[in-house]
Image (cartoon, rainbow, N blue to C red):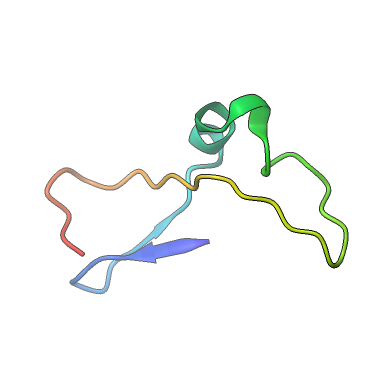
Length: 52
């Protein structure tokens, strides 16, 4: 998963932050079967001052 800033630079999701930022790693470490869904927060490590 990526995020893009207003200048077109792309940033990758921070998987380690996602594990700690979601209770018990929920949604990121679970096996998700077809037809099911989960909700989880996704974190990006971007430089300070980054604009959308």
